[in-house]
Length: 299
Image 1 (cartoon, rainbow, N blue to C red):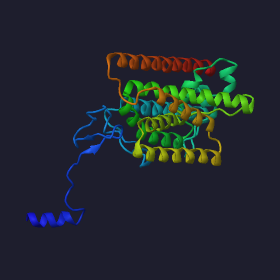
Image 2: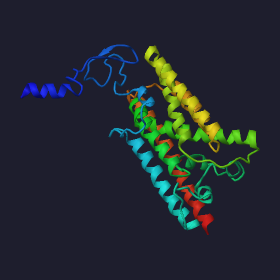
Image 3: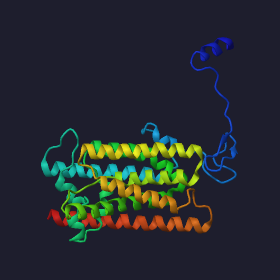
């Protein structure tokens, strides 16, 4: 019976391979197969930049609360936009497109409103708004793939700050580009893709910081991916390429500043929590301003 079982299992891939020690991608130290961190430098062995080149549909690890929060918030806000669109136009198309006036009232990035009326909260709220079902679907898949990896490296507190900071900077850059090229009269824009490009920029910085042949290969893959994203944006049109570039730039810059590991000392953890609290206050304050604006414009 055992022989028959072995023969049958051999038809589908043979005997399972024993777990083997692996090399730390940061320092090259040999690490035990069951170890989750390098005993030499503390680098996480669960984090793999190579995953960025794979399918984007993996499930979020339970240790990724920031990613889960951002995904849930994006979906919640999109649902609110859908309801507001139905109320405003009394119909909804198959793509789940959000009414432009609804997006404007709820905080889409719009240069004139930001610079002339001082509605700076739009630079934050626009991160959580999406134009249609495909838009939020694609961004959610990318966030579910990249978010847990960034949390694994930097810790959840830093990851939250980095996500918000790169997202805001992406729209600051977009607004500045709009002033230079369209005299502040360019189209409004929404979406988390600027923040997501920030995560890609962080990964590029990690690959550069750690060095080695493996990281050079990952860096080449990421650069190829970035080129494809921008090429797609220029060919399709209607995409805020300036926000993508701003997010990428911010992510790479912050990635060169921050240690690519979780906070270890008490001082580092305190600083990480402080940055996360600042980001949280900015987000909460922006949502309060958005609600006030929406109620005022609906009367």
